[in-house]
Image (cartoon, rainbow, N blue to C red; front, side):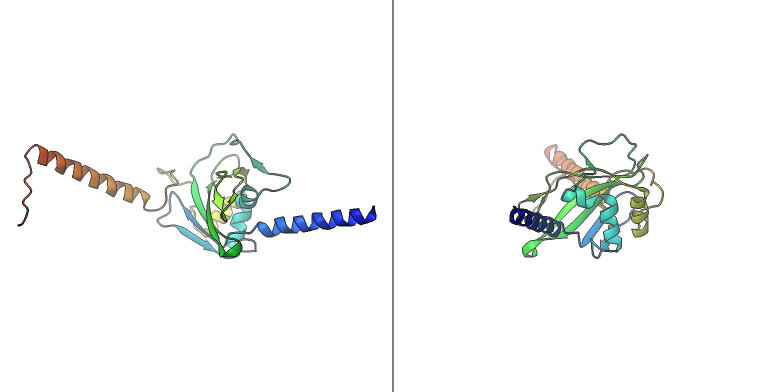
Length: 198
């Protein structure tokens, strides 16, 4: 009987170690959102005492990505005033030199507390999927984001999480489409003659 207990305890230890080993932290993150003229790059040890480690910990990255017991992640959005949202794209190294990216959205100005959300089912390391969900953070998340360059106060006029330059790109594409459409209409109605060189 004692032998079985020893084997069971050893098996639990091995499984716990395997789970801990699988829960790797990111080695870089890119933050984009309102009030930023460019993406903020955060690099380092995502499991250590670094800005990236503090960001991953404060934002709920680990329970959203891998799960945790007890589980602090919520499946439904908490009642809150969200405010501006920022997109964080994490790069996570995995086995066999696989590097995967997952996206998390953070709400540093949400009240009563900052929040983050990771979409469930994001693929990483080939066949794995993020658990996802909502995470109630603390004001520590806001402080970490401010330290890496996010505005200390909520930006006004633009609460989108589209990345830097996205609005310029959209505007440029829209302008090109309008010009192309106008040129096509002009040719059809005979307002514009296209001369081809022979």
